[in-house]
Amino acid sequence: MASMPRVITVDPTMTLSRLMRSAIDLLDQPVIQVDVPGAQEALEEMSRGCTLLVTAFELDGDTKGPIFALSLKRQSPET
Image (cartoon, rainbow, N blue to C red; front, side, top):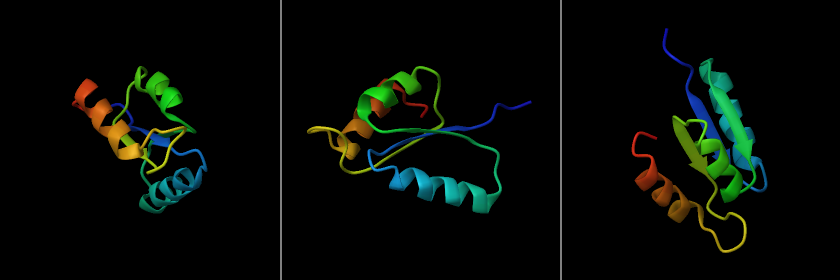
């Protein structure tokens, strides 16, 4: 049996998290969605595995979402 996909959303406002959850609900797909507010929490969750990471453009401090996603992609190419 295949494991359930694990999606991490990174968004301090949690707006992206709600949109992602709505899209998943509309598709009626079994997914584990983990919502975190910032980059540090996302790093912690990545250690538990991740199929897809969705990030907001603006994160905590000076961290930009696209730069953060690219650095994670280098660390975890299968994500």
